[in-house]
Length: 88
Image (cartoon, rainbow, N blue to C red):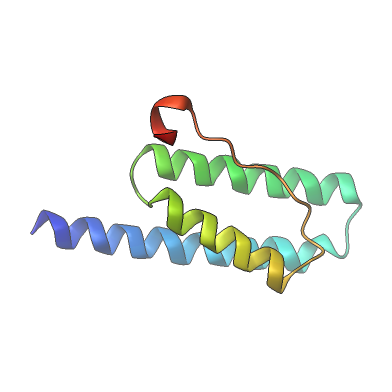
């Protein structure tokens, strides 16, 4: 039962991340670069927290970010750096 709950939570978190990046991409073209960069930074912090809370796997989050940048090249690049204990 816990595995089902964890998978459901992960899927929901992934959908929320995709939606957030889509929203940021829509807004990014209409704001200054610094403002768009800040929105992307906030989304990356939310991603790191979701990974730290084990709401989403790091590999899936990285894949979502890669796809977002391919689909929306106007998104500023922000490196997501995991804390040492989570990166392993």
